[in-house]
Length: 178
Length: 356
Image (cartoon, each protein chain N blue to C red):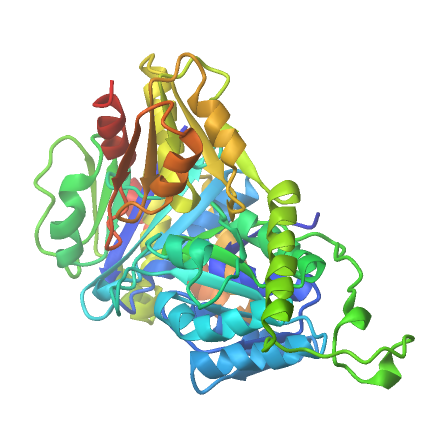
């Protein structure tokens, strides 16, 4: 069984970090993982994205044109990638920055104002973690507790941020369960 | 082996060199391998090593030459245009028989080309690049873990042959993060530098003075020197060929030859076709020079095999070696794409099925 998640948004939204945390969480559970960033011209002023592949067997092609899931942190990302997501996948839309929906009825659309939630928590920088909490809860791609541990580890060097990040995860989780 | 950690290919290559006992790194930044320099600029001082950013890749290649001539373990990383600039130095290093490890994380070309993954430097790496009769031992990893293992193998091999070794990856190998394990203990062989390095008479037991040079004005001497170099390349062909067969136990109708990132895409395509009842085999060269000639030949002439195809992210380079090995016994086809638009498994499946 293999699944793929594409994280997409503006540069600076923590897109690459979200993917890395998810990949790290899956690795601790013994899965094969690959994290593939966009490093082409698009990272200089357009959409930034990365793909995380999680599998129970060695990963073949790291090039994924049709991911299982999409986390779209802004409108250009949704417009660019919504149509490539496989049927029955989850598409998370950051409704704080994206007023449109995917227009697809064959996927599981999860609309969460992740940036607004992060601002309520005190910093818009936590938006990527809110999104992760919501996405993992809805897709069940990995165990939520594993995700928590991976976030703690990612912020191990900035320990005072951990309570905020844990709150961001919880708020995302709550939004996904509503 | 230690714990599995998630690491970018470029950073893992830097760490692997340190674990292999290489404490000298000279480089000039270029996408898509700049993270090696970024990583080692922090890491080298921690382990008492040296990182010097040269003023250009040409300068870097001679820093490598100088340090290697003194018997130091040394390596660099660059990407295609940077390797072109280093090629003059690579020729001198090969001529003077110095062990240096070069890593090329290929980007699209020719010229400035692009910054996305490519395999367009196959000819440059395997057939020369610099002038004169020389060869490099060229290894091509298909994963971050394999890149680590090959870097760790490269240093003892460079010393065994007193020859430049090149690790040929593509942008994806450098940029991708995968789980890696580093060996707990170094597995590097003792260096033979007393026999050739100019590291000072007081550092060695023998009283024989060493000289590091590539200039031989006497024709007979130069011919003898070329024959000596050739004998090393022949020894590499006998002792260093590495490859991985995939699904070759099946009665495959098509044989793919593919390396690096491209071979992973082909592996997925082969799995998908197998599920559909269509058997395809693959030989993945892990060394591009020496090329796994016999393995490719023998896999091609298997009775069930009707056609051989070289699939590469270049406009038909490795296919010339494949053709040479198959010796006309099967048709040899080519498929490839450049510019960083890595073919998908579906595209590979379409191309392979159309052959039969």
